[in-house]
Length: 209
Image (cartoon, rainbow, N blue to C red; front, side, top):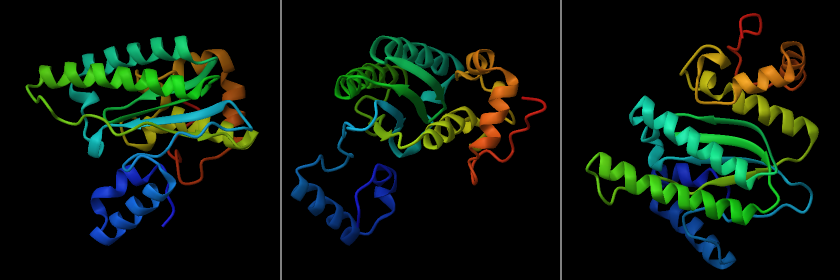
């Protein structure tokens, strides 16, 4: 059974035998037991980064103010640690961003610190000391221009994909407004049509954005 970033989401659905297979393989590779190893690409500095709450619980979405505050803190971190940020979105139980990253391991170190601070703060706020808030963050290196633009469309469309809104701009905790202003409606529509998501985002309605 191959190891991939999605294992951290499927762990609880597996049998004891499947779990043991994964742990044995991770041990042989000297990888962390319950999280994917971070691998710096030799081909690109462009990455899609994903992080989720433990068991996909809506911990970030505990309140609108929490979503807003976390989005602000994440953007501050990205501005400091990424060479360029192309798209980001924060949802109630996970977030994505597509960025150019010069020091991937340093970025993940800072993400870990942010997660730690927020875990402590949110658990105090909800009187749930000791609760596990996060899964480990995972990266996907971009393999081509098509992969990059499909990933960008995926990030922008994620709130629609998960049913939180019907159009990109309806979700306030993302870079959709900034992206559309910078890219322009015509060019954004071209990239949407040129790099479709197939099973993702089919409900996006370009005429209304």
